[in-house]
Length: 410
Image (cartoon, rainbow, N blue to C red):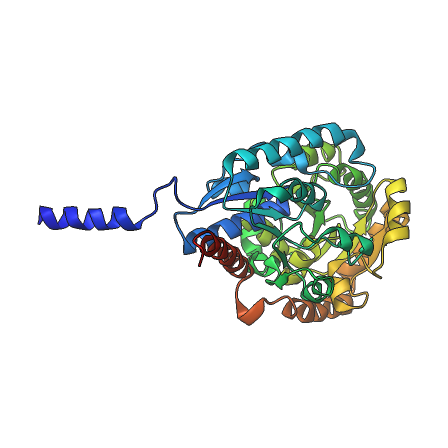
């Protein structure tokens, strides 16, 4: 019997790659949404090949999957044409650090996720290393500065995109692109439990629960939260039972707590994903920045208005470059103004208060939004009904297999 066990053990040792010979994927995420994408991709890859190793940069979610981040992901969480200027030296140092780590490790494949300002610079710097590269989440050049697409050939072997129209757009420019579906469909945003939210936070059932989503970057939240606070002061005059809820990532949790300490009504700040989804289930309305958060709320069926404010110079430059009629993703995908967009000059307490009150008080508006949400979400399904993370993992593994075959001369 012992001899059989030893023979079986030898067989297993001979067929399971040692840690040193297992594929190494260097993966980069630069903000909270990319961290979630990266974690799901890592999980899907490990489900297919448990021996895969990871190195790179990520946040809490990716670290939960075993990544030891080269440096804190929060160092990269900055946006805006003007806002980034004071951080250029620090970002340049992190860029050098990332490139040097890739050079030293010589991974089998590099995956960069979103954050094009940083990620594409990494891809450009490692172009001569002969390492296959995948960029996950297409740069939104179809929205503004479309001429930039001419800079992309040679930056990656494959582009994985989230929106159905992106595959055609980039393919027309000779870039190998694959639509994998939108990860919001895996978020679980529609699975919340309103009763659990009421119990946990001591909120009276039937209260006007208002979701406020100021952004996942440290440069976003401080710009929107003061306006949200003043809006609440106005809103409470007619809706005294309003309960503001702010779902935040760990990256900005301390900032949000500090910025809201003197609000007329203290918000419920949630950092747990399930708690956020429970809040969605309890909510009657939401006020959110533009971006993926609009799709999360759409999946949860929460009527919303979209708002945003950036540095005036950034706004001036953006308006000259933007080539799409809407900034809210749900509006862009629907091809019409499904939800109100209250941007820049309209991002004022009085305007926001009126919009939120209308969402609570006009059932027809909410019904129309929810019907439009269903159509938008249907268009985000991945190929053949595959979950987005699984489709992305399959694309990554295909590139790894192609590299292996090339090295073996097959």
